[in-house]
Length: 190
Image (cartoon, rainbow, N blue to C red; front, top):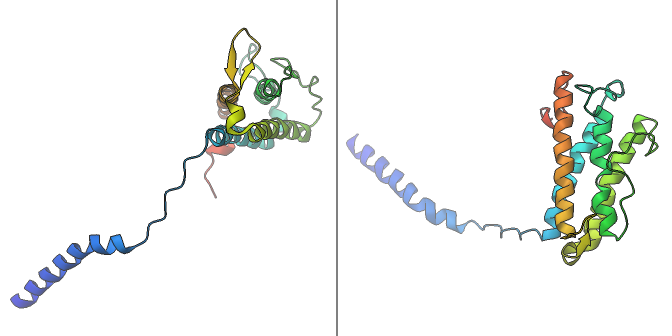
């Protein structure tokens, strides 16, 4: 019996000793190349956009006019503001003035139905993504007048507007929670 225990110990030691050598024989996938600067901007833009689109699709129409206090924007006004503000990147990046005011109303953007709202949010996100793709890395470094005396890079402006829309997305999440609803992003994945 003692002889078997000795062989068992030797066998276990050999397996542990051979493990690193065996692991080295397995081919490793080469590391993925780092995304380019414009790809990083696009991923950030699309991630915030995906969340806004999910809320627009999920938002019960009977909650559109909800606001937590009289001085707050309504649920729908938050969504419209977060989406329409994306044109503060898209339009200047193309040498145009932003097409909407800072706080457009539902009537200003001609949104009659929930389907109109969803289509509007999708279009705002897609238009920005299209500009980022069209500009590429070189174009994201171009300077642009962003409504003030200073010039900024197009890529910086895109990040600023994605962050801005993300902040409003966070406010929409709070509105959801106050109404006893779970936002789409916070639900268990299927």
